[in-house]
Amino acid sequence: MHGEYKMPGGKLIVADLVVRDGRLAGVSISGDFFLEPDTALGIIDRALEGLPASADKEKMTAALNEALGEGVSMFGISTEAVAVAVERALEDRS
Amino acid sequence: MSRTGWDDYDWQLIHDEPQSPVLHMALDEVLMDEAAAGRRAPALRFWEWASSCVVIGRFQSLRNEVDPEGARRHGIEVVRRISGGGAMFNEPGNTITYSVYAPEAIVEGLSFQESYAFMDGWVIEALNDLGIEAWYQPLNDITSPGGKIGGAAQVRRRGAVLHHAMLAYNINADRMTEVLRIGKEKLSDKGTTSAAKRVDPLYSQTGLSREAIVSSMIATFRERHGLVDDAVHRREMDKALDLAESKFTTREWTAIVP
Image (cartoon, rainbow over all chains, first blue to last red; front, side, top):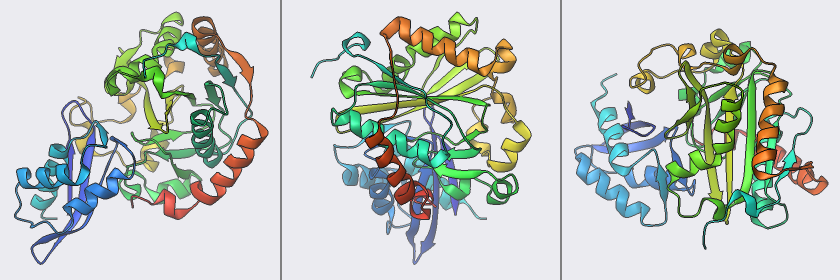
C-alpha cells in the first residue's frame, strides 16, 4: 500500500506499508524532506511498525512524537504529516 | 555559541578537474567532517562532473524516484547523497553544482528556512548581477519568474554545516523524464504537470556559457566574503576515495531506503 502527502509549506512524504493481522508492517517512510540526524528515519519506521491499522492520525502522531523525543530536527516534514501519508496508504486499495 | 559572519573566516576555493559522481558524494562527506574537526578552513567547492547521474536525497525511496530501465538505457549512474531533498538529474555541462563547508556557528540562531536563504545570499546576488531576477523560494529553491533554477540541501553534524546546491544550466527534459519518476502528488501544488516546465535553466535565461556563469559566481563570492584558491588536499582525497568505494558505490547505501 502506498500513500503520498505533500505537506503544505513543506516537502513530499511517502508511506509504503502492508497490513498484516490488522497491524502496520514493512513500513517505509520516504520523501524529499530533511531530518537531523539521518538515523531518525529508522526511528520513524520502527515507531509505526506494529501499530493497529485502525489507529487514527492522532494516535500515530503521538507514537511518532514519543519515539523521536527532543533531539531530532525536522525540516519540511512533521509527525502529523507522516501520519497523513500513512492514512492515505491505508486508504489505498490498489 | 553566538553566530559568526561570513567575514569571520578565510574562505578557500576548491575547483578541481571533473570527478565521478560517487567521488563527489564522498568528497562532500569528507570535507564537511574535516571542517568539523578543524583540519580544514571553511571552503566553497564548485563541482565538475565526469559523467551523467541521478543524485537522490538521503530519505528518498530508490524505486519511487528512479526508473532503473531508463537509467540503464541511457547509461546513467544512480547515487545517493548524504543530505535530504529531492532527486536531481545531472549531465556534465548541464548543471552548476557547489558546496559550502562551514562551522555551524555561521547559521547559529537562524531557523532552517532562514539559514538556507542566508547560505545562498551570495548566489542570489551573483545571479542578479548577471541580470537574472532570482530569489529564494522557501523551503530550499532558487527560483525566477520563468521557473525554478535550482535547489539546495544542508547537513549539520559535529559542529559543521554542509550547504550544497545544484542549479540547472541546461536541461534534457525528455531524458530526465525517462530516468526520474516524477510523482503526481509532488506537482499538485506547483501549478503545472510537466517536470520540464517547472525549471527555467540559466542558459535559456542568459545565453551565457556555463564557464562564464561559474566565473561570475566565484567573483561575487570573492568580492563579498574573500576567497583564496585551494584544492582538495592529498589526505582528504585518500579518505574520499576510500569512502566512495566503501560506502557510495554499495547497494547497502544506495538502496538504504529501497
